[in-house]
Length: 450
Image (tube, rainbow, N blue to C red; front, side, top):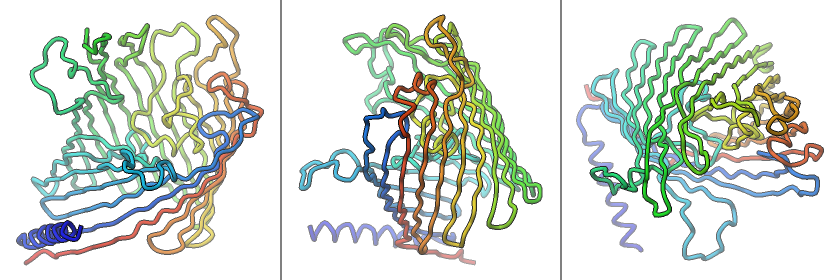
């Protein structure tokens, strides 16, 4: 054990020596860590509970160690994380399960000061994270294996991203019946996107285009591909931020078209897509401490139990959905509501009590944007789904430590029962608190030699 530690120490020292010996370039090395336990009392999170169901309590945790190297020519990011629930393995177990993994492993090479290529496993996050987000609320986060060509100059940015996924390294020349030609991960097979962004003094504007390719393959009992085709869904639109005095305005508009895949009689078949999203958010700062915000998010949906053959439900793709549609995560956050769309009208107020403590109260009213029928050809249900109250707070006792938490309650309708089950008359609430400990362990900086 002692010898192992000595080898690791020597290896790190050698790497550090080689890096600082590189000529002329300004360089920076930073190592930081994160420990983030979150305790939750759940009674109606994600979906409705029945009256006789008791609240449940548990603690989940994320631990990360992050390495960053930064120079004029190369940047490197590397992150290892462990995600677990307290007590989910017995003490002194020989095998602790597959909880530790590489979260990020990327390098960015600069061909010019304004032009670079970023390769590897990385978080892709743009604008308000409505379409592309790092999903930091989820302990596991969201990451992509991709290459991104990046350009940035004079307030203008352009990113061209490319990704292609396979099941494993065991691939060769594709042949009919080759099981590896079947990509069985719940993910896109390939993706291409273009993000354009421009900053002005009081205005920011982004344009986004995404082409996602999904594989619709049919596999027989012998795990052999019988037929396979790729379907492509396009998402395109804009995001705008504008400041007018004490008023902040955010506007989003996106369209989806092309095809997706749907299972019919255990067979994947292509289906046409025609959907859209629009959102507007206004925030007025009455003082430096007090603000009021109001907004409306509209995502198109597909009629339930109707005769629609086209998918009219907007899919927020890779967004941080927890941030937008109520933090109890009844909608989109890895949790379906039968594709009936959503209109979320919300209003709230925030107050900063001191440099260390702030709080916010937001009320969401949810309705479906597509018709809901009780059965095929049956009676129409009310489109009102429910009202959610979200009270949150943040406290920073010292540098590198943040405590956040809150209380939420959902007042649901009987239509919500149709979509998600449970009992709308039962109390649906959620109490939670999270401690984020994020210290910088090591930091070194070398200035550029003249």
